Length: 213
Image 1: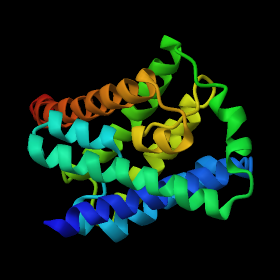
Image 2: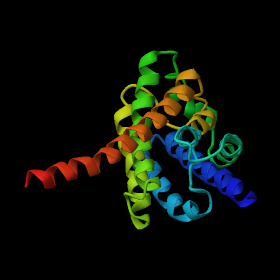
Image 3: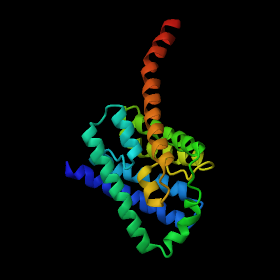
Image 4: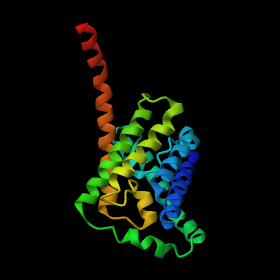
């Protein structure tokens, strides 16, 4: 069981570190680098821990009763720990990290629109995660579905927020406030519930089509 939480710690640390270094370099390719990183981590860590590496995803899966409360708390603790270690590592690797992150941190405001953008972006991610958890997307395509969903979510949310979609990464970036915590957690839960509803309706629709023929 320890391996599960070590995997979550490691995965969140790597994802946060990629975000920190890309943002610090002001790269326009940050969303694509982050999406690809998650894609790869899903294949590497998915068989070990499920590769949540995001407290919002863990909260959504807890809401869908896929994990217990104690498991969820342990996952989230490991994820935030990974984010904290990523800050330390990035400060070693990137010169003047604090100054480079300051423009992004200045955008952290208590605005409900920020929370809505974070929620909607993470809703897309939640749909992608649930498509894999439900078995509707084959295991070999799991990384593409989840990494691609994160990329789309970031592109959607980016115009109104920092498009973090992950409270642990928000901590690493210094972008943490109530909207960067609650927004993604609510969005992930709603996205998973939405996908669960959509696939629950599919057999009924197929049956109606057959009868009509």
